[in-house]
Every structure is written in structure tokens, then in C-alpha cells.
Length: 57
Picture 1: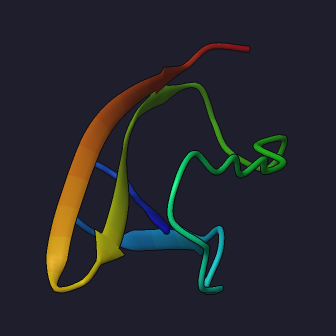
Picture 2: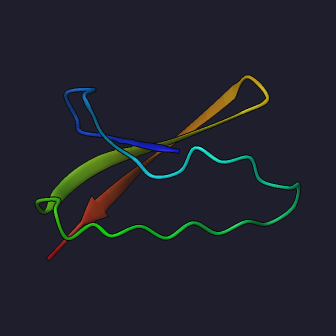
Picture 3: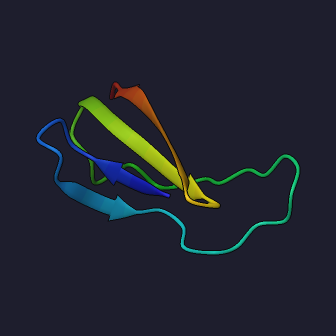
């Protein structure tokens, strides 16, 4: 699971672990990020899912 800025630059790797099937939860500390829009990307079994998130402080 990785976080990218809107320029496509990777700014954080949240998790690089393998999860079991089902519902999983990942928390991360965003205190070092500025307010703005980011893309969170998750890759599993050669499938990549990306979601925009808005961080407001």
C-alpha cells in the first residue's frame, strides 16, 4: 500500500506485508503530510486499486 501525491511521486509506503483474505485494516500516521489530495494505491494478485483521499488538518 503506497501513497502518491498528485504529481505521481511516491511519498510513503504504508505497508508491504501480505494479508489474509477478508477484511483488513491499516492505519498510518499522516502528521508529516501537508493538507491536500493524495492517491492511495493497493496492489494484490496483480490487481492495482487506487483511491483519492483528502487530508485536512
